[in-house]
Length: 141
Image: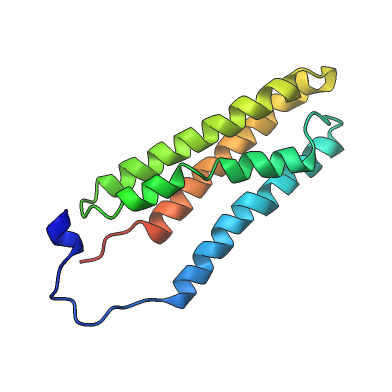
């Protein structure tokens, strides 16, 4: 690992500002826009179990497992670029579903309407995983 990170045969460091801007838009959309959509959906379905701030905080905090996943994906083996983001996605999704499902299911309207919304949260995390994996965690040779 040390030898890989401290290679001296790289003469020119390449960077892509467009890739960085794309990453910022993907993560900020997931952290800010998606919770707002779920909040509006809950408001329209008369399930006001969580406020907009709580939705935003849950989705923001749920992105924390991606920080070590990004660092560990520096390891140059392709299997790690699947394992670490998948583990981060599972931890992230569990945090949101665990903290959202109890308040939503506690209301009378929520018992019938919450399961499809919880499945939508799971589906959004699955889509987020594949977008992140195939956009950012690819090893090129």
